Amino acid sequence: MQVHSTPPAKKAVLKPLAAATFLLRNARQTVPLTGVIMLAVLLICGIVSLINSIPFSIRTIYLYSKQVLGVTPRGDASQTPALIEMIKKDPPVPLERVTTARAVGTTVTSIVGKWPFAALGLKQKDMQYWLAKQSVRGINGRLPAAGKPEAMISEPIARNLNLKLGDKLLKPGDDEAYSPYPVKIVGIAKTDMWLMLMSYEYIKTNHFPDVDAILVFAKTPRDQDKLNRWAVKAFEGKRAQVLAYHKIEEDSDDMFKILYKILNVIIGTLVLVITIMMGMLINIYQSQRLVEFGLLQALGYTKRQLLARVLRETFSVIVFGWILGVVCAYLLLRLTKSILMDPKAFALNTLDPTAFSYTVPIPAAILIIATLTVIGRFRKFDPVSVVERRLV
Image (cartoon, rainbow, N blue to C red; front, top):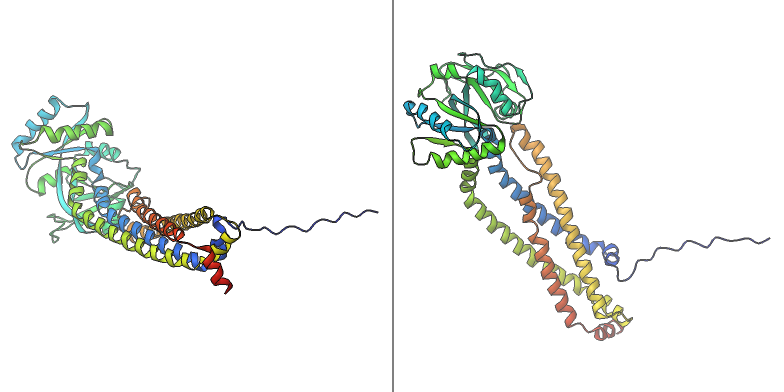
């Protein structure tokens, strides 16, 4: 009877020139290199994301203005009818609604401190339209009654100022949120927009100056942006102040221009320091492998094969470190957002493309320096002398 024996399974053998061979067998040398790159990417991505959150938060606070064009007659109430007539006469897009409103100045808390905000006073017929424009999904409570010291706020405002139904939004004794009568919160709107809504009649009776602001609505967001840009040019030099979202974007960019220049200097210095340090580490790292390279070349591997192997290893370490850094940065930003930002409704983009693009120079610079270092070392490399020293 013939018995067939199963041959023993062969053990997987790593290819000697595979990029993973040395990296896996010598984790003590490769992990620190990967860790340095990861920490550098994490640091840069975190710094840029947090800096970007400042203008991003400001734009988020005033995002409601993207749905409307605001025009004020600079304190001259007699100019309001003329401005309305001018807007209706030759608009660049079809108008959906033109109405008047009042506003009361107050403040909200931003990342950089207290920031001016306006409690908008609307007539009862305009309130529901305004809420629909701001994508309000519902209201806890109710709308402010005509002529009453009442207010409705949105969920971000409630979190930011730590307010709830029944609390006072404006008070006689508060210089930054003043009203001659305590203004009670009677509703909280379910929306991501920052909104404060009051009665037009109450503001007209109790707050000065006695001047209406004009609110102009287009039919679509695209038309609204076109209308806003037209109004800025049309009213230039006239006795009118235009409030448009694209102007807020431009002003926030100008406001933080110097800050971003400083940030670029910091990031550039950090990239330079990290690159020099990594170049030194890679040089030391490759010096410790001279015997390995000498023996492999003595066994018949060409210098070009060894150079290609080292470059693949270096590329793998750099790319893996960068990917790990990006993932860790994202997780850290998510944690920061949930713990520090969300309780105050501050805006933070955890997938900020600008922040992640700032990390690209690090692996690119390190790869260039590492490649030049490796090529320079292999150019002067003599495997015979290495083997002779090893044998002696």
